[in-house]
Image (cartoon, rainbow, N blue to C red):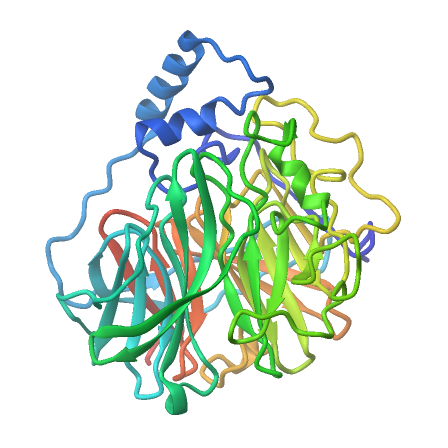
Length: 446
């Protein structure tokens, strides 16, 4: 039986700095490495400590040799079991093959399909790409907004309006500003051939922050054609806001940081939002107490919203997200400081929602998909969570009540940035590296 309000704490052997998520995000430029390194416990970090840590990252980094062929490559995807506290967690061997469809994508972040089967893929440095009939158009889409591309920031999610065939609207999330003052934005525009027309910024986070961390930035659509957008908490210590660590803003309902927001398709706030009439909350807030959600999906069979979010050192979470609820960060958490110290002595508290899964050490969760297709009928109703550090996809089986029954790991062998169910019922994966790939997972034999 599952305990701790149906949470599962995945207890795995502690390994190196990467497995503790210190460098679980995309490759950092030198200034962005400093941003992350100075999170170690206090506001004063000696230069020698930084130098040692930087040397450590060099020694821990493995250079990946890429196959020079651009043709589709097919190989068997291995599936392994994760050990959990639940005796029900017994993984089954699943016959999969993974086919590399597209290469030469620079840190791809998200993908979406147009009704005609054309694929849109974002590249974090600031390009929107088109894939037609399996071929990557060499010319990026024109008309993108000005983007702050640094560290974890850049061009992130892409999503199409539920009535795209009528209005041809696509939605982009991205970081905007400068290192000293930046924020997450949503823009929408009409897509005409390879150009964005009539681009409008329909929403931006209420306050700016410094650094290049924790933008969140995933979008999903609900059946009523409102959208949910995830916003990170602003970054690790010593980044501050109003005299305290900026991560405390996740508990401040007057801030957009550390939240899931619900918006109309034009960026306005729905009148039935949980805090729409509250005097102590931003009306766009839908849920709060989140660190950095980079995976969110909608279960259309039971009208449920699932999200995965990054912990700090350990403590990554899978949450069943509901309107008006508080998910605890940083007041309660299974995470620790990157230095190893406690962030909070509490892991649970009345009035705050416990996660369904806790991953320690971190998998660095990325894209999240709910599977409803017919190509893997045995997986209908399962969640598929990408892992950057774990370089795999976690298949998560749920029961009717939304409790986790079992997990298994589908090895990809590269940092997984996004995972999506395609219109054909197959699973598609983006890998996060300078020469990123689009991979399709399908049953052995097609």
